[in-house]
Length: 275
Length: 362
Image 1 (cartoon, chains in turn brown, blue):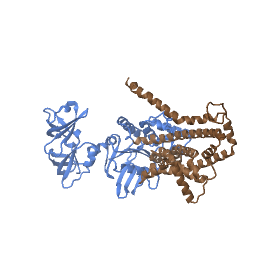
Image 2 (spheres, helix red, strand yellow; image 1 turned 180 degrees about the vertical axis):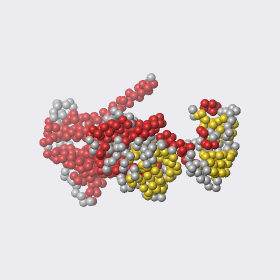
Image 3 (cartoon, one colour; image 1 turned 90 degrees about the vertical axis):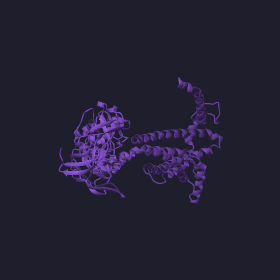
Image 4 (cartoon, one colour; image 1 turned 30 degrees about the vertical axis):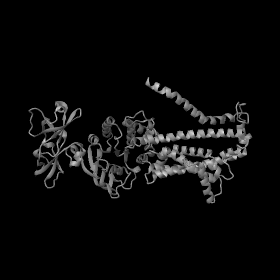
């Protein structure tokens, strides 16, 4: 009796608010795929008909393919580097207690909250001072910086609670140091590492600001899209491309989260017994 | 039981800088016995266990297992296996794969491996749970998997690092009985590390009580409990009333002392007993004191006033002030005759057996 009565008055308002909130957040995103399959070149209602033609044109745009290839190269490099650094940092933060552990952790996570344009401009200045000419390589460096916090978050939740006695147990059961790494350590941290790679790749793929400042003559996909927006006729193609990016990001992030939870779950159920 | 030494600890010291976790320790553990290392945290018991397993090395001294010196032999080539405090079950493997983990190195043929895994699972009553994932197990089941995984290797020595501390009381008591039964069935030497005196008393053939990196006493549970060598051991093993005493006469196996409160007492002289300047301590366990009811008398009795009374269900704990004693006596009496109804302040008489008053070094 008491439960429903307490819930009802506030509950209906809360529900409406939550619904509005979600609509406001995601409605624009829903327009993207809708207009990308519309026959008309201008995005407006009513819709004029269904077509895949904007998608079919995508592979026949050389500039787009170049940009996609650039993005892929940058994404893979940034993901691998950020994850490699992330593994070292996450291992140190979760396994050892050393002076300055918290401040160091804070500094690694800082790019998450710094204004991206400030990071982009500062990095541009540094690159120029160092005499580096702008290229995909400088974009990779910038992306590594902003990917590391994400990579760290994923990896620490996978490494945390990794019980050291697991490695001892393996040795105790006759396994060599390399065998222990192969049969225990690696399988336990692999999901977290793959998850970190996926997250970093996605972040790099979607990143505009830093790529915009640090790239030379080779655009990545977001920069290509930004360039195309000036031409009204190209808009449907951009929408189609945007939809593809959206789907790819969504799939990769979901996969990454599933893997991250799996890794965290393993580590935590094992370590939880200490509590 | 064969008296052959399975583990020989010879003048082993383990220092961390100036701190000695283990200080010049000698110990011999017999083949096939259930041996416990008992002591408070930081007494060096876990350090000693980890050195036997090969996870740590002595700063000086030597350890031999089955007559073989262990120096320079890494953990993965020692004839010992360990049950970890956290169990350390591999979370990415199922029960069967966990148990078979060490067997993979032996390259047995498939059927033989399967047979040994099944046998180990049966030993710990986990038959049929082989396919269960490691993360789907209860605390008790994890403990059994850890046991099976170690036993399947057929070690010469099984090391157990506080294996029951993560379990609740009821399960812990059940596992104590099971562990003891298992040890007797497989006949392997078990070395258990624990800080729980009841656990050690209930399971062991012999116990080493440790304090501050040194072994204070090695004996069978009954001897440790009834004939502790000093106050520290007596205290750690449970409640004990201490009475200051002056040695009057030492003759062979008997000892005559004068005490305040208990008067002149003649008691057994423990083999290890030695006193300085004639001062000693007598100890008597609270449950060895008995309330005298009505006109019942005893040759050995003291009288005093009840100052505290604590009810524990099957027993009552009485605190009785005896004239002359520096501390009131603790008495544990069953409630069969109404010990739980004795009013505070009442004067009662208490019978004791002089044999139960144990002389120990001060």
